[in-house]
Length: 275
Image 1 (tube, rainbow, N blue to C red):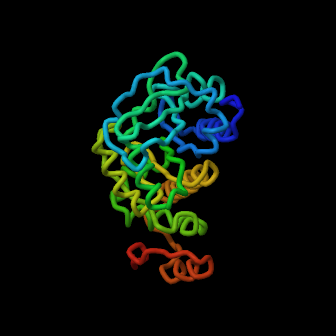
Image 2: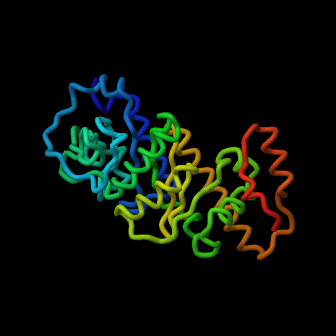
Image 3: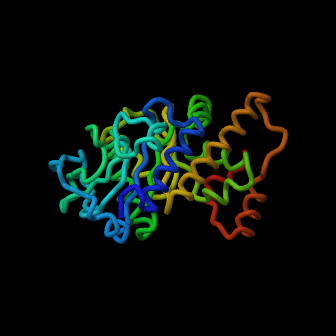
């Protein structure tokens, strides 16, 4: 099978375009990665060629040794993925030590995978372990309203989770574990990768102050839907704060508990404090 005909590749391309159309990927902002299933690699193996030398990842991810990933390219534009995926994306292989990668497909006009590759792979490793292998997608986008909130809300998991949960009834159901927050850090390096991966041990969403959002999920639909839900909740909060400094009414702690009971989810009590 041709790489571009594979179902997972089509899903990857669609998700990139969906994010672009949401306005989350100005210029070359944002990145996406997918941990490819063994049977999916088998379908396209004749199109994969190891023409690239092994390169250092910049960190070690031993639990991902021998795995394959589809990732967007560094400096590439999400708006161009649907037009020329072979230039904008790549398929890479991780070596047996989990410290190096090589390109097997894509980036035909040169380049490297996303500069956030250490963050993506460290978080893939964490979520692979935490989910028993179910999580396969890591998505980073510059979600406008979430970024705006990082200038006005306390940069704590509790503040962001509670405020976002209150904005729409579905939110505690979609992200019942809550969201984590990383204070501002230089992007692209190991430090922000470590900080994010620590949060991802208990959350599927990490907010990067003044930068954007990082989400993990089992497939493209669930991961995009998670990002979309959090950002829509943030948009409602931004609009609410623009109208008033104090809400007249909101969802109360016991109402959250009733919601959790009916929808059979567990909501951490640390986020159900009385205001």
